[in-house]
Length: 353
Image 1: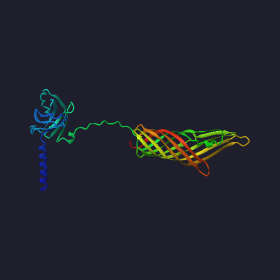
Image 2: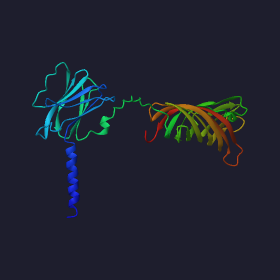
Image 3: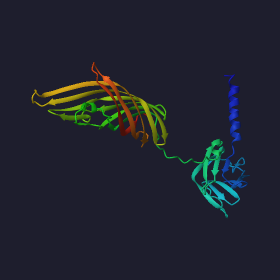
Image 4: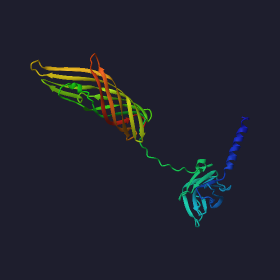
């Protein structure tokens, strides 16, 4: 206990010295013209004067004893604009302010607690002055000039990164997929254009580079051929689908992104033909022929997408899809053609917006 007493006494002495050095009120006036005379009037008596500097600041410290025998009191604040002079009046709420003479007077709304350590910041930049008050020294950031407000730009959607789901309708020129089904029959009609659906998943590592996987369904209800000859008739269709794996490169322009794609597809397709022979000289009946092909082919194309919001977009794309493959088995059937595809659909970005 004896060893610690000098330390405690020193700390107490430091607090007393600090309070003693901050025992007078300080008024800082900002945003006044340079060389303007500033007066600080407390309860009707001028306690300090100063001249504003080139930075528009003036600091005034009240003479000691300005509060007389009071430690604190409730006050009202006025600011007089007298042309080349500004006057800050701090008056007890029980005492009215002196006459204004020819000055324009503005009252600061509010009731304030004035102590011996009170610091007051008065800003006269606008027609109606404002006051900030602190029991102690003013923070440095209060004295810094206000930063101009930067107008916030409207938030617009941009071509995003990350995981994206997509799906759409597709119209395709089949490139003669079913022409072999007609053979040399003169009366035969083969579908050369069909509508189907596709969808998939892409991941944009940046706004410029992505990887994508998609699936295209080939429906037998829309990809078919039919024909007839002497004493026979037939119909053929294709049932299957393909998976395309591509790399994509994009160029974003605000809400838009132009892109190109290059990769490969793997298809599996089943070709079915039902042939009916009319009973004439030979017994009639219906025969079903079927073969399956599978294999890899090239995929390339390009398009554009537009993002309506940060999560929802629409797109259009033109793609060339190669169907190259051999029969799945010991047969000799082959598939070798190119499909021209136009897709229009929507996109949805997953995860954080």
